[in-house]
Image (tube, rainbow, N blue to C red; front, side):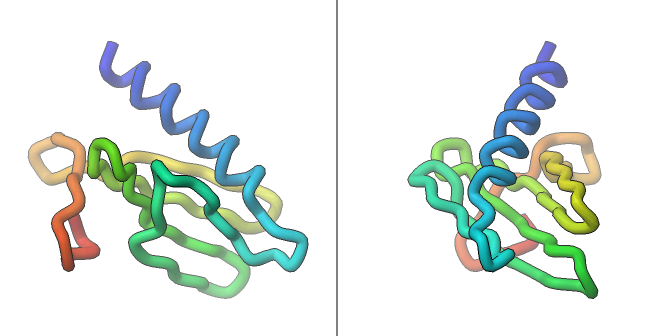
Length: 90
């Protein structure tokens, strides 16, 4: 059941993040709940690490080539990765 909830949250976030793309092509995340922890651009792909400010769970978001995807980040033991102040690796 947890995986379905995580998948549902990820799908909602993906829809939200895609809707926040500006006309210049720069992704602008306007939300009090989510913040961009890090951003990288490789060729035509934009990669983001996003933090849910209520739960501190980290998500990986990638967009490019007219596609986008989002997934929670997991630790080696299978638990979700949680943001720690000053640590962009969770």
